[in-house]
Amino acid sequence: MKRHSLKLVNRLFILFLLSPLTINAQEKLIPDFCSLQFAGYTGFLSVSAGDNFFNERLSLGLQYGFSPKQITGEQIRTISFKGTYYFKRSFPLGFSKVTPTFNASIMFETGQNSDIFPNRKYPEGYYMTNSLNFPLSVGLSFKRHMANNFFADIEHGFEIGTLGQYLYYYAVSLGKTNENIISLAFYIKINR
Image (cartoon, rainbow, N blue to C red; front, side, top):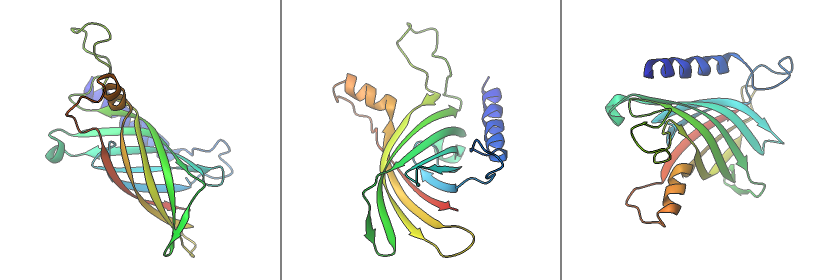
């Protein structure tokens, strides 16, 4: 079952790279952005590609994450559909424009400890699936306009986030948890 899930994740990511996110394929075949992220809930390293909408206030993309066995104890791959909203209020800082962001994702994880369906030996409703997650984060984007033909601007930033499930359990337990539910991620993004 795990091997089939891994093949599915790999095939979906390859299909994404070969097909555009836009409805009108003749208009553009190349995604608006590509990014590389370090850490966070999507893996030790992750790559993504996608399109920008509404005057670059919203970006939607597919993200593929990887965590090697040497770091996490087992090899984990994730695939996410991620949306980033850029708030209108931004401010200049040196050569960059700084913008607060809100990010939400739907993430599918494969690994030995990830189950698509909760274990049947426990009562119904006792556990939720742990291979489907909902990361949420806020961050700051530092965008710098570039004057060249290869890309329009380069963006880097950070995100502080958690999983939607962690927030749920935190609220249900009334904050009584010893678990660290916060994650920090750094990224670099190239917009064309």
